[in-house]
Image (cartoon, rainbow, N blue to C red):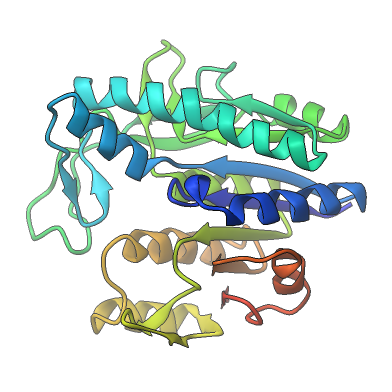
Length: 272
């Protein structure tokens, strides 16, 4: 049986298309596909920070996470959004199980050291309670997959001491696909894929090689949150973790399965 890792951005969790996506996932499971879901929650976290009087600090598409911001991430991502996504999958006929890093270190992590990032200037940035994935509890996740369940991972990691960290959901999805040896990774976003012109969605690029993705970052074609998305995808492809990574958005019923069968037909397929 093949394995697919699917990452859903927080903006997707509040869109009508979520029902179509969950329906496709349930059908994949019925056909014998094993599916692991990873989700973010950036827009919802930003909104709650504003309500609480916090000022979100986002650099080059990455959230700097102090202690207060971490509390927000726990409430929003590991709380409401994980429950909401599991609920939508359950309604579609799938069997979801919500998890986060503190769930027996389903996502093992360590604190990220200060580093220079693309689009963030030349000085190293301390991202606070932001983590890097060091491994997965593969025994736990495999147990669920083999039992016909859909693990639903919130973008929260944890170290052995129980300290939790905010982690970019794209990073978790890429690392999950790599560690589990997934056949494919699908990143579901608000954009229809990688586009040459954000004001013209018809400029979607159906397929990209690693070299083309790097060039798109370097020449400014790719901006904002798409930069770390592509950078992390490139790392996984270079490591041989997955055969292809699909970036898709604005899905209708059947689109997910169509993209999996014909890479680039719906979104952008990033290939080695």
